[in-house]
Image (cartoon, rainbow, N blue to C red; front, side, top):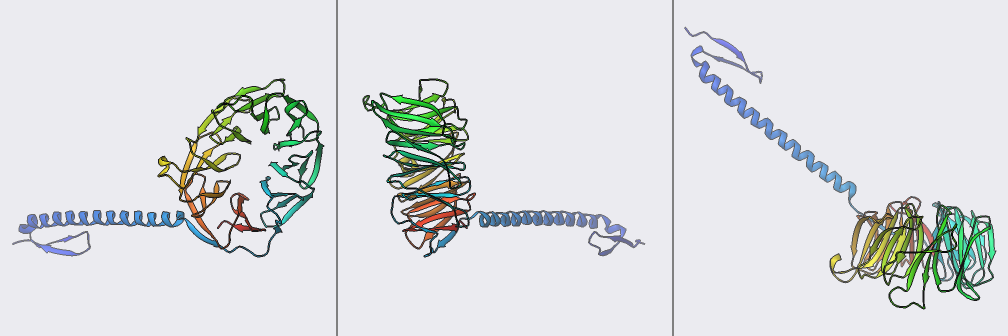
Length: 401
C-alpha cells in the first residue's frame, strides 16, 4: 500500500502525495523553485529601476535652475545722482565711490559707514578692509579703513592711477616734470618705502604685492611702437631697477590684481598670472575674441568674451571661468551682449541682452533672474548670497534665492 506522507512547502501550504509520485512531484517542486527565483530576480530589477528613477528625479529637482522675478524697490538705500560712480568690495561690505566720497553698504542693506570727501574724477581701489580714494588728474589720495581716514597723500604731481593691497600698502602713479611718470609706494602709516622715476614709460596700472616686498607695473612705451607697445615690469623693493617680465605681443594690460596665487594681469588680448616674485605662472590667450567684461576674486577670475565659431557660432558672448592659477573651470554661451558681470564665493552674476543669470563658478546654470525694471549695475557679495542692484539712481540689496 502506498504510504501517505506529509511534506511542508516553503510557502506554508501542505501537499499530500504517494511514494510512487515522489519523483514527479520533485520535478514540479524544482520547476516552482526556478519560477520563484525568476520572480524574485524580476522584483529586484524592478526595485533597482524604481530607486534609480527616484534618484534621478531627486537630482534633477535638487539641482535644477530656479527662476526668480525681482521687483525692484522704489525706496532706495541711497540715491546715485549722477553717473560717475564706481563700486568695490571690502571683506564684508560693498563700497560705493562717488564725487562726494565713499559709502559702505552691508548685507542687510544698511549704510555701515560714510567717508566724506570730494573728487572730480573719483577712483576707488579696495582690498581687505582698506579703501584708497583718489582723484585722477588731481593731487589727493586718501587711505580709508572702516570709514575713517588713515592717511592722506597730497601729491606734487597729477595722479594717473593708484591701488592698495590688503595690508594697506599703496602705490600712486603720477606725472612728474622731467619724466614720463613716477610711482611711489607707501606703507599704511604713510611712510614712503619705494619710488621709481620713468624716463621711457607711461604707467597704466600698479599693484603692490600682498607680501609687501615688491610691485608690478603695467607700462606703455609710446616711443617703441609695433606689437610690443605694452610691458609688465616687476620691482623687488631691494633693487633699484625693475625686471621686464612676459607679456603677450599686442596685449595692453590695464588691470593688475592680487590673488591667492600671486598677481593677475588682465589685458585686451590675453590674461597672465605671475608669482609674487615676478615669474610667469600662466598665459591665457583670448584667441582673437574681444574682452567685454571681467570679474575676479582671490581665487576665481571670470571673463566675458565675444563668441567665436569654436564657442558654438559667431555672434553673442561667452562666459569663461578660471582659477587664479589659470585652470579653466567652465564656459557658458549667451546669445546677447554682456551688460555687466560679477563674481563672489562661487557665484557668477551676468546680465546680457538675452537675460540675467546666476552661474556656479564652473559656469553651470544655477538660476535665471527677470528684472521688472532696467538694471545698469549689479554685484554679488556676502558669500554669494546677496545682490546689490542699481536701478536708475536707486540702490538696493536682494537675496539671490
